Length: 304
Image (cartoon, rainbow, N blue to C red; front, side, top):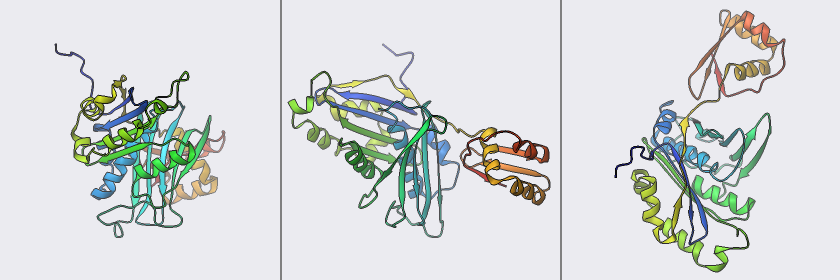
C-alpha cells in the first residue's frame, strides 16, 4: 500500500527509543533549512560544514527538553573563527551564522586552542529567564565530543553525539541512557547495553549519515535493540528578528549616537539582519520615537 502522506526525510527531528537497551535518542536531518542558512555567506567548505554541525546540534539538544524561547550554541574566539552561532527555537525555527578571518582560516576548522575560546549553551528567553552553560573545549576535537563532555560533567549522564554536514545537508544523532522509570532500569539489567549501543554508533560514517533516510538509518543500526520511532517534529529556517528588536538595539546605542548616525547617513538609518538579510529603515521621526517608550531586547544586526 502506498502512503499518501509520506513522512518527510529532510528538515525533521525524530525522537526514538531503543527499548531493549534502555536508551533514548534524537535524530535531526536538515535539508532546505540548512541550505538557506549556508547560502547567507560564502563560507569556506570546512567552516560551512562546522556551522552545519552546530546548527544540527542546536536542534538535537531541543529534542529531550521542554523550554520556551530558544536554545543556542555560541562559540567566540580571537582566532580564525571569530564567532559561530546556531539557534533552534521551541517552534523548530533554525538560524545560524559564522564570522571569520578569511586570511587566517585554513582547510580545517578547530574550535578551541586559545585561552579565551568559549562555547556556551543558552536556553530560554529574555522574558522568562535564561540558563547558560559553558562547554569545555580542552582536548575536544569536535563539537560532538565537546558536548558529550558537557553532559558527562553537568548532568552526570553519558551521551553519544555524532554530527555531519556538507553543502546539502546537516545531520545529528544523540543517544543517552534512560534513568529507570517506575523502578525499572534497563541499564542495570543489561550492563552491556550502553557499550553495545556505542559500538554500533561508532560504525556510522559521514556519507551514510548524510545520504540515509532517518528511519532506514535507525533500523539498520539498531534493529536488534527494538527501535520505537516517534512522530517527527518539523524544522525550518526562521529568523526571530523584528522591528521591535532592532529598536531595542538602537536604544542601546543611545540618543546621541543615533542622531550622529542619522547625520552621517543623510537622515536615514538602515539596519540589516545578519541572519535573514531583512532590512529595517528609520528616519529622524522614527528615531525620536525610540527614546520615548520603554526598552526592547536587542538582536544581532548590522548598522549601515
